[in-house]
Amino acid sequence: MRDAGRTLPRNDPRQYDDLAGEWWRPDGVFAMLHWLAEARAALVPAASRPGALLVDLGCGAGLLAPHLAGKGYRHVGVDLTFSALEQAAAHGVTVVNGDATAVPLADGCADVVAAGELLEHVPDWRRAVAEACRLLRPGGLLVLDTLNDTAVSRLIAVHIGERLPTVPRGIHDPRLFVDARALVAECARHGVELRLRGVRPQLTGLLAWLARRVRGAAGAPGPAPRIVPTWSTAVLYQGRGVRRG
Ligand SMILES: C[S@@+](CC[C@H](N)C(=O)[O-])C[C@H]1O[C@@H](n2cnc3c(N)ncnc32)[C@H](O)[C@@H]1O
Image (cartoon, rainbow, N blue to C red; front, side, top):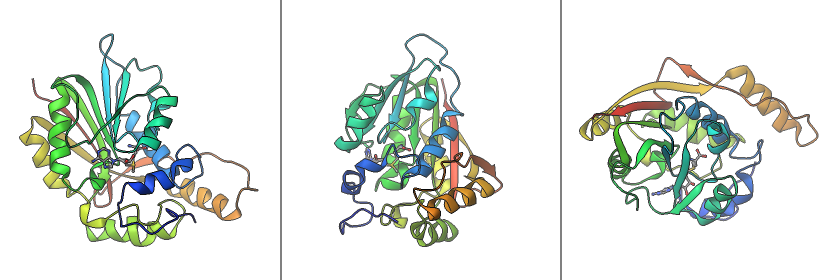
């Protein structure tokens, strides 16, 4: 199992520089981000007008890009981390180096705002939510996924997850996990009625993937686990909501 390679505080963004070579490795430490990106993109319909803009807050290395292909959006990605943005640009994303809590883009510019696996990394996630909603045009769509602020989420995402090859050690600070009800309330305050559903990796696919990882590089590549809906939002959840006109 790889970790950030040097001792940095939990959730320190410099970890993404240390792990820069991992982003696009399908079986690397960011593999689960690939699975989640596919599931997030499935929430995004084809663009309803020419030139439609999708703003991807905390875009990382642009893992959402291949899953948006053919949907008709200009994909603009905002992130703190240069080394990730370089890779996002190489995958066709128009990149903006910036903070999701103070995005240098105009009010109402976006047909879609995506915030995948971002909010649980932002000390002031409410500010990032306000920015996401500010960027949306009336009728625009917010899609996100994040980790809930619950004991079971801390257990699975940190204490268990960080012992598996699916979560880099130290990448999360569980104190920043996002209470689902507070998130819905915050979005509503900013004009977006967010609907949530719990999601998780499909179990047999995940076990097969972990077995391949344990066997190592010699193992034959196989299909990625799918992210599927689950009955509880207590750990990982997606949100989808439209900005009021
Ligand atoms: C877990 S990664 C998710 C990346 C991408 N959304 C994906 O799903 O592949 C979190 C990303 O958020 C970025 N990030 C963290 N805090 C941020 C902030 N305040 N503003 C912008 N980006 C931030 C990190 O640099 C990193 O690229």
